[in-house]
Amino acid sequence: MDPRAEKIYKAADYVQGKLDAALLKPEVGIVLGSGLGKLADKIADPITIPYREIPGFPVSTAIGHKGNYIVGKLGGKTVIAMQGRIHYYEGYPMDMVTLPIRVMKVLGIKYLFVSNAAGGVNFDFHIGDLMIIKDHINKLPNPLVGPNLDDFGPRFPDMTRPYDHKLIALAKKIAAGMGLSLKEGVYIAGTGPSYETPAEYKYFRLIGADAVGMSTIPEVIVARHSNIPVFGMSVITNEAHDDYAEDYVNDGDAVVKAADAAADKMSTLFSKIIEAL
Image (cartoon, rainbow, N blue to C red; front, side):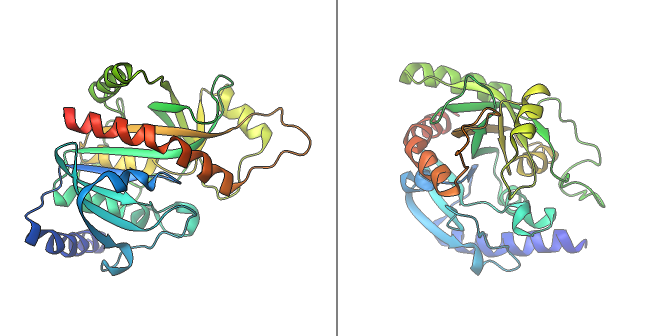
């Protein structure tokens, strides 16, 4: 067996062992980005599984990422939430960055919801806005490079619809009913961990990006490799423009604070979408 697949199945067996007593079978996977861990607090009857306890699992080191799987009920469904993700900039190879998503696939998820904190490249985006991700531009290494994991999907998966159109339509309908205004746009991801330069922000805008971050896309690619429908949302935590004041600086703590302020709206929206599935 491919050593990568062996690691996936071993980790999944461990997690499933923790869920068997509660007779839980996850239907929906959720990835909670920087400062967005509040959604985990809405999960009823939670079982917490720290990443550090799972065999062969990477440990999240990023600000605002606690590093747990949380399994329980949300919107009437059994969900498995990543309370903190793994980033490429932490020094992990892509097979480790995406390992938690592969484990979710083995556990049986039918949908994946991803979230992140992002800089608003689009001049019309402001701090606290919620952006539905309708497409992406990948400037990270592709996680499917290397021998294909045939158990999970084809060698050349289609990426025409990386974010599911039906889920996007459902989110818009529910948000309208909540009186919640949503943005919609293209997310671009680079390696980080340094924030981008003003010239890079301008370049991203020119090539069609609306928001920029350092994550999410690898998780989406492996989910789509396994034909799992994906819904993605960015919380705009800073205005990623190229016309800053002389004394402006990007601040990681400020990003987490801004994400936390918007987390309640996103949490409610995610809950209602999951309930409607």
